[in-house]
Length: 191
View 1: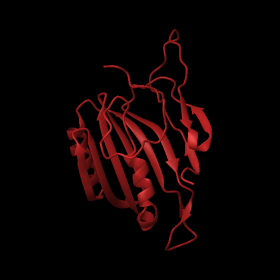
View 2: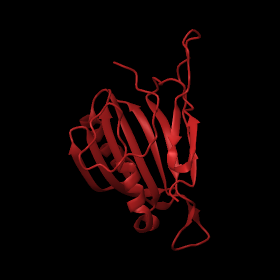
View 3: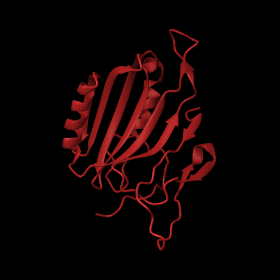
């Protein structure tokens, strides 16, 4: 079972005008038989907007069965009009700044970047995989993460989910797997 739990997190940083009608867009999880309204009723002008978080069931660490962690994926929408190239440069600098190590990266197209990296989080060796897609003057970022010692067991599942990220209005990459159905999501504001 891929999604044992789902948490939706969003923050509204700008007030909604009183005269504007608002109706949350439902997000459909057909495989699980439910639909839920988006927490954010209208697109936000926030610089960073957490959009969705998903996790696998909590799993024990292979080396210490008393410790547990749920491998997870989160999606963020970043207001980033400078484009993917600048985002890549800034992200790599941030990884170095916090002491993380780049394991692999690919750039399947001019609007996509995939990067795998490792580092320590609160003393625990961690492993992450990120896909960034540039569209609509934003960067859509899906990141999967877990303790490094869980990577061999869960990485294929996490990568499959992360690689399914597509920005609405952007062309789908030729090699992408079928997308997870998380639509309709509130559309990005028109420039």
